[in-house]
Length: 258
Image (cartoon, rainbow, N blue to C red; front, top):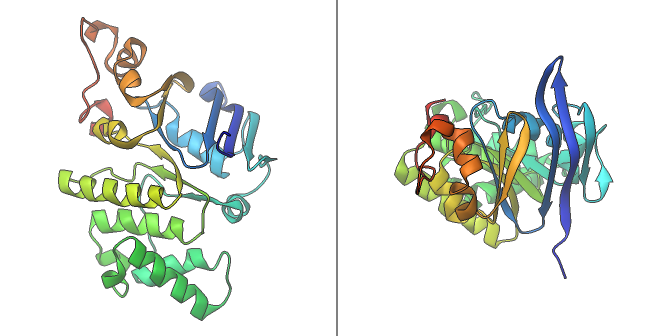
């Protein structure tokens, strides 16, 4: 018996005037999967996330979550259904401490101050940040802010978490710690849809990889197949870089210099 279908994007498009930022993208994510979204600069990855989570309304197509079409639902309604997400640029409320930032997410399902505090503290412990609960968000390091973003998403009690470049700017040791965290959360049953530019990370734990280029889905498959695909290599590096045995570098692409 196949796993439950959580997310079903059917021919989703977003046009800004004559610019087709996302064009006729079909995407499914089943419970328990880790699916990575990759592609060169301007491919439409974050725009796709914004369509899935409600920051943008699609020009065409449907976004379905748990069998329900959610095109007209605002982000907070989708969050209540079980969509959690992080953003490309971490934007914690810097005047609040880490615990208070996570409590804001916990309030989505529980208006009780004490219960929201308890839930937020449990989430911070889950991500290894309990010792930083009283630290102002503005005093956290980049890696700590990235992890706080994950904690805020988890406080929503999500069925699926969409991570937008959660490892951007981290050093090798910090990336290794984030991979360990995400693997642990996945082992607990969480489903992930991830935009990630470190292709070593993509290869490390993705069940499937989808590739966007100029707003279109151009490839889908296992990490090994995708990173060796001539079509994907050409999208990243240009056709002039193609040759026998060519594959994408797993640690650095054009995306690494964004």
